[in-house]
Length: 355
Ligand SMILES: [Fe+2]
Ligand SMILES: [Fe+2]
Image (cartoon, rainbow, N blue to C red; front, side, top):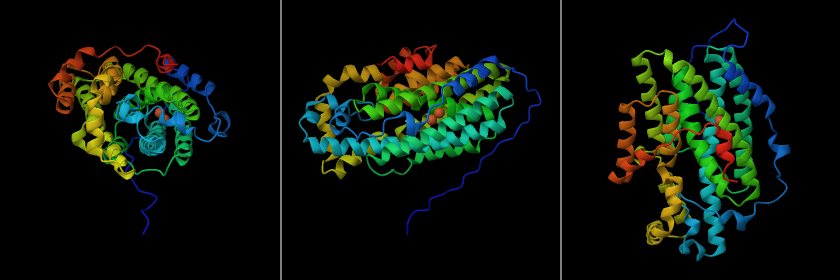
């Protein structure tokens, strides 16, 4: 019996008419105009004519934020093994992005109904189309590598929660701030490191859209959070924290690293031995891991700065984040909190800065 192809989830929301059609939130109106200007077509604007460059593809292999490709262990594996592990790992990662993109497609569509401002509805309409395109191009690219892997349970749980949330602000925090924040951070890193031309091109287009989506969350929430009562604000930041925790806490079952290690087994290598071999070259990797922040990079490097910039990072919630970092990485992780930076002013420029 094959697995069912469809599955239901409750989409809770209050749809809101707005009878004022005049521009109201200029920043969102401008973002909408910008989104219209920047539309692209996956099948026309990306060069699908070339087969995947296997050598280039396996030259830039990282696992859970660790650039394994810089180790002697990796260099000494047969080229075929490097390609097999690279393509499966990438298909696994990209499959979760793909499922996340489907979730984003849902939520953007829900926001068209649920947000109260017309400028916010217009913008969400463009994001809906952006997400359809992302689902389309990721599915096409994965087909060149491997099959689509099932959604990681914690990501599914998070998408369900955001879909089931009544409040449009919770949907924006869950999707535009946390899920898309994490995606943007990871896409940027992957885009900057990959040597595979089509993947680089695809991630460039997708990340530009995602920078805009996060920008929407930041601009919209910056406008509404100051109008909330303290209990409402606290509830919203709790929702953001829980969403982030689901994505990064290895105790919640979505440890990308463990799942990716399982793929080594499929190509005939012992995962425990792989971990031991990589650990031997820890010193060599330290600088690179410090640059990306490793697995916790998206939290300190992006999600927390974003939450802070919209007024959703009280001392209480920052403490919660610190606890998760320490539970996953040990007490030394406390130091990471002192390195939380400000959110870059121009998100698109930040994405493209890596070359
Ligand atoms: Fe997307
Ligand atoms: Fe998005």
